[in-house]
Length: 200
Image 1 (tube, helix red, strand yellow):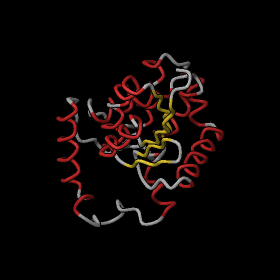
Image 2 (cartoon, helix red, strand yellow; image 1 turned 60 degrees about the horizontal axis):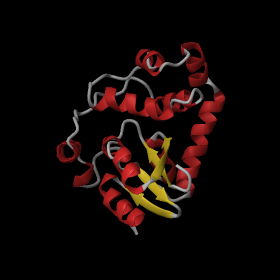
Image 3 (tube, one colour; image 1 turned 90 degrees about the vertical axis):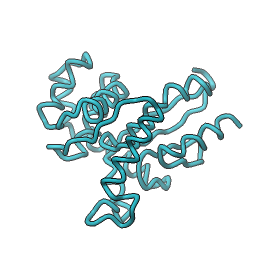
Image 4 (cartoon, rainbow, N blue to C red; image 1 turned 120 degrees about the vertical axis):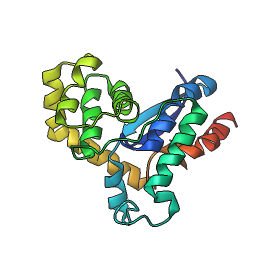
């Protein structure tokens, strides 16, 4: 897509709103001749780096109440016409999901891995553990041994750390966050503003 606008897309694999926003990426790319650059991160780690993680302890306001977030996500899913189910708690550290996608990227499968994990979490209701992560290689057509090696590699973790630093340095404070040049758009509900910027 020569000359197409690029949008940096920082997403969390366990984030309801990242899943919802990801469902609109292909439509936006086709409509505005742009390209999203997917940058998976552990969103909790980003919030911890900035301080004041709203998901630690009791909800700070109604928007962070778990019951409301489930209701809101279901409303958005109905609006988009996509399936949604409340995710089951992970049985691995959340950063392992981002690391899996970055490991898959070593074999050219970053976006397919992100989408597969979102399918497992928000559609199929799978509890993500190390066995599930190891099993991603087969449906993605990856070399399983290489994938496992890259999942454990210090270089993969270092890349994730760089992405976290990059997101924080640009002013991101949660996911999903989109950057069109220097303009930041945070949240699934800001996609309409991103689309307006692309159309301008």
